Amino acid sequence: MRKRLIERLTHSKQGSLGYTLTEMLVVIAIIAIACAIAIPSIFYLRDMLRFAQANNYAKSIFLAAQQNLTELRSDGGLGPIQAAGAHIIPDQVLTFPDEFRSEYVFTTTGEEAFSRILPVGSIDADLRDDQIVIEYNPITGNVYSVFYYSGNDMDLANQYEGGGIPREKSSRRPMLVGYYDGSGLNSSQIELEQTQAIVEFVNGQEGIVRVKIPMPESYFGDFDSFAAALDVDLSIYGEYSMAQQALAGKEYVPLVIQMKQAGDNTGCTVDIDGRTIIMEYKIDSLRNRSSFANLASGTQPAPAGASNENEAALTTLADESRFTHDYLDGRIFQLLPGENIKIISIIFIFNN
Figure 1 (spheres, rainbow, N blue to C red):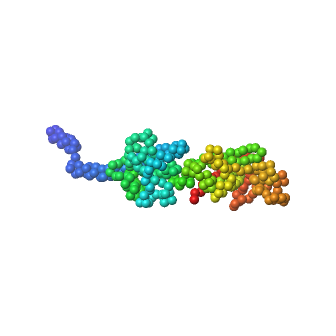
Figure 2 (figure 1 turned 45 degrees about the vertical axis):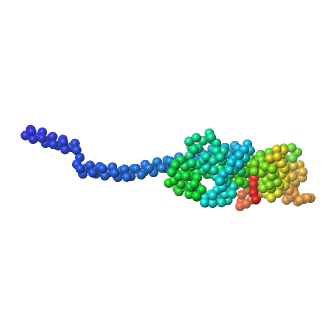
């Protein structure tokens, strides 16, 4: 009896240490299914990370190239870039905006223009040696976009010239091509963006707003063309008026003065540096009907010999209500004499 019990326990113990063939097949099947699900996901995540990295590299290259070109432009050093030679944007590149096509060119890794736009030391050396295409404007120094590819199984420049590189993110993802673009500006907009106008207030016998506009490099020696292309407005904001309109829940409308309309160079002079346009506007004068209050109340300029209340000089305006006007769909325009003001110059450049 004792021997049989021992035998039973032994057989039971031995049986618990192994798996049947069916159990093993089930486990193998589960592992196979898990791998079938997990392995593609791993490759997908890997490619997503590589694609994200390629886009980040393209952005770094874009910023480095734009910084270098901006510095060269400010120092008047774009000449070598323009002389280095580059390639026109091919007609096959259908994704490039037609309105900018005549102004932009492209260069690729290893070319002279590329080396000047992205000199040694501007970015990591290994990154600089990868396949890169840069679209840029050699006159204004504006970078439109950068394509980047780190692999060796595709010629990025040839693919680009043939129109085979899309800009859309979803289309580029399978190719693992990085891309980054700027704000796609034409030359007029770029010149406006890079022209840092200075607004001065000359407080003498007359109050004069003086606007100084540096000419872009592309206009040096052509004062008439640049001056004629300018359209300049002054927007005048009153601190007290703005606060009152905000409390009333109404939209504030500034006083807008047109200093100059595009089409001619009337009122423009050249500074002694030969590179700056100067315009002036008298906003306060002791001459009759030429004070700032007259300007703010809409009673200036005045016809010669005007005497009625609607055309009155400042001294006849008895209360501040004359400076409040219903304006455009119930919005209020208001600018009071004596309050602190802020003057903003709004400049547009219109090219023919």
